[in-house]
Length: 266
Image (cartoon, rainbow, N blue to C red; front, side, top):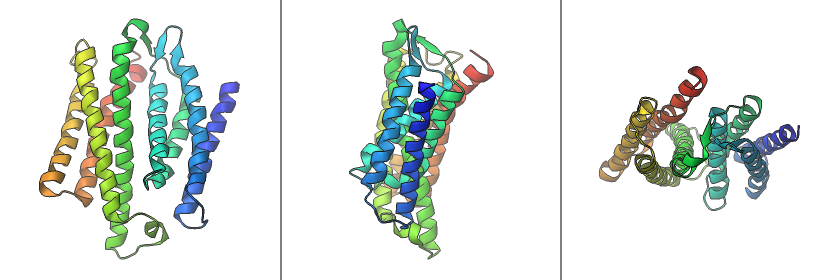
């Protein structure tokens, strides 16, 4: 009962912060960005407590499907709120914070169990940590790419409404996008490297799809960064490559995890 009440409190914090961001973005209400960020932090703190109670068990760490999804969403939301104090990325919360709220509800209503034994926790835990950090940063980059795409379309149609005028200039938006991609690419590289070190066989039958898709996603982002550096890729080209890479990455981890744990019950 306590956990359910805490879930409702966190969800309310996320959604209230989202509503304030929408009002601020559409300029219906003039307010500093600190207010939605502080309210969103309530959701982050309570979400962390709920993750701790569901993932840390006497038998070991529970990396069930909905728990890991909730953890990834918490990372994304946390990185967003932390970054938003210094950079103009708070508007990404309009998409990211409701996703965090939904992931928390799924964790509470549809809990799953996939316990990682204590003797394997340290090494694999490092690999999983880098993976989730990479997903989180590249997830933020994908939302940024979608927002950039909407902004570019409105500007090309010469229809910059209040929503578009409230965003930073396109050059700033693109710079933020590639900063996120670079950080996410480095984290994903560390995830793959830690997998080589700590996993017995990355190409074992139950891991081969995840490994191949992860490497493919890494290559997509590597090509995008090379194209940006060598040929100045930007705009729609950058958006397409970013979305393609992130979808591949989602399939690599959550797609494989869903098939193994939910469909095949392994």
